[in-house]
Amino acid sequence: MAKEVKIDPDSHQEKDKNVLDIGTGTGLLSLMYVQKNPDVIIDAIEIDKDAYEQAKENVAGSPWNNRIHVLPGNVKAFSFEKKYDLIISNPPFYENELRSGDSKKNIAHHHEGLLLRELLQIIQTNLSSTGIFCLLIPYKRNKELKILLKDFSVLQMTFVRQSPEHDYFRIMLMGELKRETETMIDEISIRDSTQQYTREFTELLKDYYLGLTSQPPLQ
Picture (cartoon, rainbow, N blue to C red):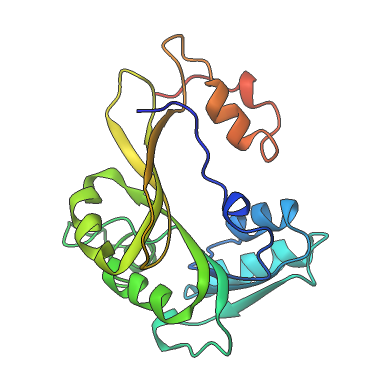
């Protein structure tokens, strides 16, 4: 696999005007994206009340508070008034697995809030004909994901591992509505064999995290 990571919505489209962030949590992805794309309008929806309030606070305290609209509610019951040029989501990680006694954690991490197939249906309904979507998915759902993506075209899949000695644990995926296209597949390690952040990982996130190269090794 190639080592150069190129996942970047802006490399596919010159400009994303309308963006939907599904399950925004505290608003991190929306705030990261708008930093490099200050002309976009982002609708960021969150089902959990506390996370929604925190996202509102985080956005209100940012320079882009007029560019991000934080919406409360369940995306499955929400009717959006427009199609989106870009849809981003870090969806629930687990389905059909043991749940904790914390209902909020179950909604955030399990399927009580949103099934992966439901998320893809929502993307299919709300993505513009030329739009793209970007997801962060657990690697163990790779086989399931390939089946669920039959109605989409995958532009890029980047497999993520903690270091060259670790197995993959995440997939960064960029796709679009069904059309003829070639999928680029590559990989990225967060740290190298000396437990330093790799050049690819640093390049990917250096604009968002200060002192990236001085952080302690991952356990």
